[in-house]
Amino acid sequence: MKKQMNIENITQQDKEENKTGTEIGLKADTKAGGVADKEEAKTHKRYMRQALTLAKKAAAKGDVPIGCVIVYDGRVIARGYNRRNADKTTLAHAEIMAIKKASKVIGDWRLEDCTMYVTLEPCQMCAGAIVQARIPKVVIGCMNPKAGCAGSIINLLDMKQFNHQVETTRGILEEECSALMKEFFAWLRESKKDSKIEGK
Ligand SMILES: [Zn+2]
Image (tube, rainbow, N blue to C red; front, side, top):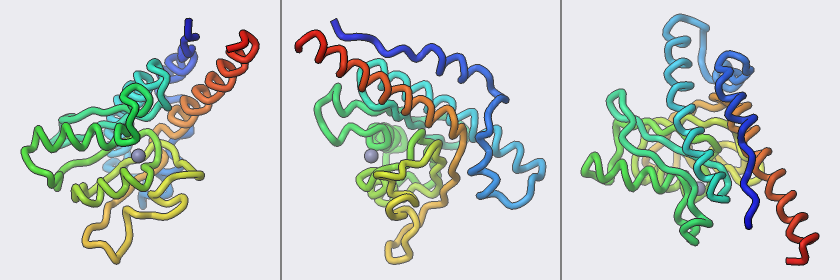
């Protein structure tokens, strides 16, 4: 019997809306702390929270917890979460799943008026797909120093050599997004230890 990941304390943390120092990235990306900025931050957090909920779905299935929503005209038109292990394909990243659904809804491969919210900095494949889909804006939860391609290793979202550049906002609900990842990998290490002990 496979051990279930305990994400209770994350969920708890998730409820404590105002307790986090998650505006670090936002502060770096926005100019003044005006009313419009505050409203924007609120909106970003609201959608990122939905992406986080999806990330937890991935974790519950034993996949790295990454979630994504795509917003068009003030509503979520597509959702995705990492299903790489569940579906046994490297193509099943959260962003790709969401892009597929959004394209279906919009009826076009171009997602020109959409904003993507994703809990973790996109990889090279997803950053490539974001550029290809002409998504104008991506909001990122936490960065991924070892594999991220939206500023960590390379910034594929903002290369003047390509015909499309993506505006990015980073650090929205950063602590929650990063805590969920840490929790997941701690759980993974523990369950590996357990299966060694059990001689599996
Ligand atoms: Zn990816």
